[in-house]
Image (cartoon, rainbow, N blue to C red; front, side, top):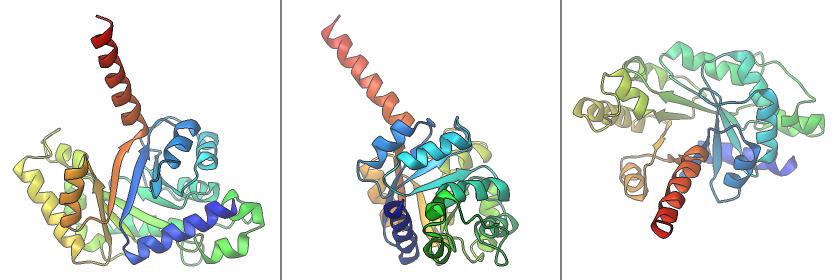
Length: 258
C-alpha cells in the first residue's frame, strides 16, 4: 500500500497546485476493468457509487486493483458512506449534485477528522496500511482528502458563489448532461440556455481558487475546455470503452462475414 499512499499524497498536492489532471470513470464495478484503466496513464480514476453496481467489498477490490489513486463519487454528503470510502483507501470524494453551501460544508466536514470535521478515526484502516502507516496518513491524505463537487442543477448554479467560499473544496466539476436535463433540455448540451449557464459557471470558478473540471468528448473538446480554464478533464469510462470497442468489432466482423 505504500506506493498507493504516496501516489494519493502526490495527487492531493497536484490538486492544490492547480496542475492539469486527466482521469477516467469507473461504472462497471469491476476490479479487472479498474486494473486495466489504471495501467494506461490516467492521473487518477473516479469510481462511481451513484449509478453503478457493487457493494463495500466490490469497492475494496477495485481500490486494491488500481495502480493509480481513486476518487470515489457518492450520491449524497452522507458522512457514513464517505468515511467507509476513505477508510477503504479512496484518495478523495466527489459529490453528485452539489446544490448548496450547506451541502459543500457537510461534504468537507465528512472528509476531515474530528474536531475539524465529523470523520471518526480507524487507525487499522486499509487507507493507513492497516495502521503501519497511520502517522503519515493522518498528517497527509487523511488530513485533507481531495474534495470535488459536481454542479448538475439550476440550484447548484444559483448557489455557486456561496459554494465556492467553502474552505476545503478543491474542484467544481460541471455535470453538463444532468444540468441540461434539470433545465428542461434533455440531451441538448448545445442549447443556448445550457451553454450560457455553463459559461457562467466556468467564469465564476475561474475567479476563485477552486479548480474547474468537466467531461471531454474528444481532443478538440478538451483543447477548447483547457482554453476556457479547465484543469481537470475526464475522458470516457470503462463502460463506454467496452461498448464502443464491441460496436466497432461487430461492425468490422459484418464487413468481412456478410
